[in-house]
Amino acid sequence: MLLKKLKENFLFAVIRGHSTDDAIKIAEASVAGGIFNLEITYTTPDASAVIKHLSQKYQTDPNVIVGAGTVLTPTIAKEAIAAGAKFIVSPHFSKAINEVCHAEDTLYFPGCMTPTEVITALQSGIKLIKIFPGGVLGPDFIKNLRGPLPDVELMPSGGVDHKNLKVWCNAGVSAVGLGNTLVSGIETKGYPAVTQNAQAFVAQIKEL
Image 1 (cartoon, helix red, strand yellow):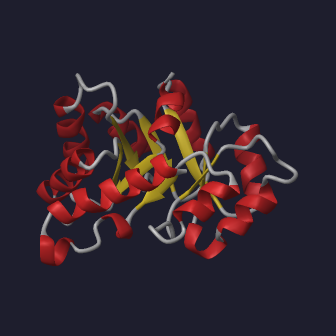
Image 2 (cartoon, rainbow, N blue to C red):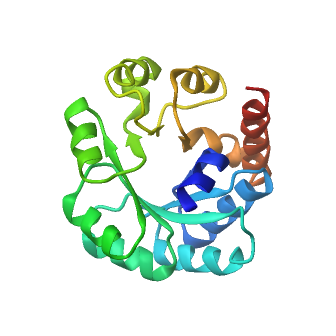
């Protein structure tokens, strides 16, 4: 089951490339470091081409799963799925995007910020909910939300770094999205910095 594999991988590389080539290289560096869930955001130029390229490159690797992020409309969702995206992530909950994903048998992880939004997503059949912005809400939000909703599957995105990863995990998350912290140091060290950051996150997860 795809969702099970995504949760086993646990770490999502949220990739916002400055160009298609930049996004591809960040993705490849992430995989080299052991992060296999690749969320290609639609703030990346020609994100669909990146998704298509990576989907073809890793089609024989059972660990690597390519998806799309920052999907704002049903049209973009359809485009991403056609390019090979196995999951769709948005910063908000959209009934229309959910309908597209359901029709295409594609996983949809919407962003939610309140208990009302989370419950609305759950009632719409969502299996994993993105908590966004994670840096604003914090790990305590996860703990408090899991009080009345102990079985909810949550993935914070934004605000997750090496210093607080353990705190997020202890709060009961099912996965985490890594954005800026994953590409930290890329300006001075190049793409090997991404691989090093990925390896450090993977090592932390193994210690938990």
